[in-house]
Length: 179
Image 1: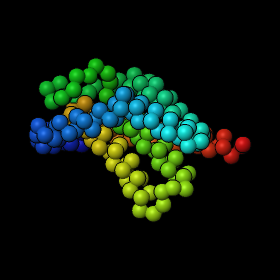
Image 2: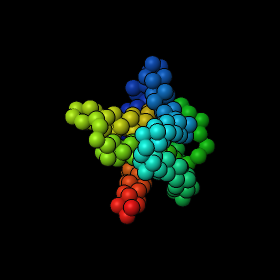
Image 3: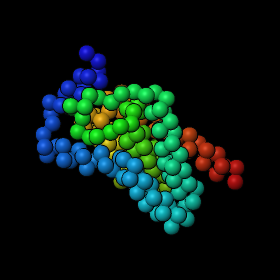
């Protein structure tokens, strides 16, 4: 039995209506609308704080990440978990998980913005980093719980999203250094 099947079977065994309700809320924060809203709010706040390069980092990485993820889904063409277990109706391919990839892009770019900031210091900063990591982990695992994705789709989404965000961090940092 593959790790994908074993994890999906475990998730099916722990499903309960209250958990499903909570997981559905979490999964929506990592979808197209949720990530877009969070990225817009972060971008606007960064612009208001006179941090246009950080605003560009967040907005640019999220806006360009979506077509990259969509192209990867077309290239790999992996099927989603079987229909009877799936709690969401989807017609796109499974690999990589778009929710995991996009939430990772958002979390990593916001972590980079936080790292460039002088505030907050101390335990607040560590808590914010943990919150960002917890956000993308919760979104990714919600996709497995709902049987929208295999675990390996989610792990690939996290890796690819993190790499895409780090590419944007590198690009924006390079532009900042040249100025």
